[in-house]
Length: 256
Image (cartoon, rainbow, N blue to C red; front, side, top):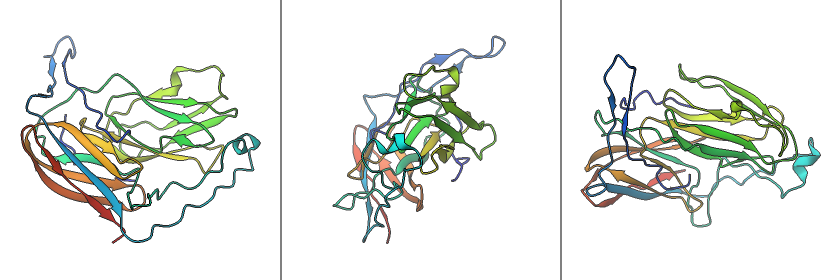
């Protein structure tokens, strides 16, 4: 996994975008001014991520170590989720450069990661710095949420969650202070379980859907560096210019 130190300071395949507001800082300091998205001039980036050639076949997962995990349908590895048309799912797309010194407020609404059928759902998520991530357990068995971030400022997470219906605690929700890409989430009880959290410094990001498509909305007119990041195959980069009230295309291809 990689960090995002190159971000400017500050799942859905659709953008998680939010209009900013004024937030009070320390009582002795000035108020922090957040940028508000101007939807009357904002543009968008859309596109698709493809896997060229024949993708590796998903591998069936043996879950017999926990009988509760065998109650649902069989599971397969999710490193390469490619549609019949070659669309590459679960690729994180984000704006790396082009926003200058614009600072956006983090959404208060948590991003949800559920443990269901002894897998994390969704497999890849995006979240802004300071936005909560909420972990839930819908399974009839004990699960564990374990993360070891590599960026200083992001705290290690290691919590256990009781079976569905068990008592919950504030530890089930976490926020991250620094941008970081493809932070792995694992379950110590079920080693095949894995998800990835991408902590972004701005609200302009998306995760490709089952057909490999994505859209990022709300961008101010300008020229941007757009990056696609896949958990195994790494990054691809494109440069696009977004016109006022216009939509441009940025496609990416892996496996070639």
